Length: 160
Image (cartoon, rainbow, N blue to C red):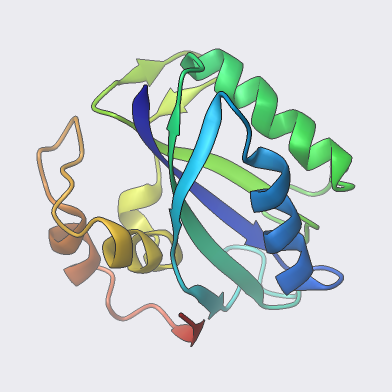
């Protein structure tokens, strides 16, 4: 079993329900959710004219290989109503693999660790709540260290 961290985001519909449904549908015999971070509300980045997001990180164990895990996440996204839209635009749910143990994957279809996680407070803040001392497998920096560099980004913790 590999220890993994998944990033969830939503800014359409019942955002809290979207996060809860994603966690519920992900939890299975080959993917067991261990802990959930608090929920954070974050302002949009890149495409600013859209509703604010709710974000959360899940810590889980899985027996799935990275591509199998990616396929599972995409199935859950589709089940919850995700449809192709404008890149970085509004979405019912988005589920990203942030970390998969200390594994590094770099293909056109999949990059692990998530290639932009170190630049996003909405990823690092909930991840630091669960695993502040976990190290990025490529840079060796801890989640806490990366978070300190993006502290100026606007984010608000909603619940524990």
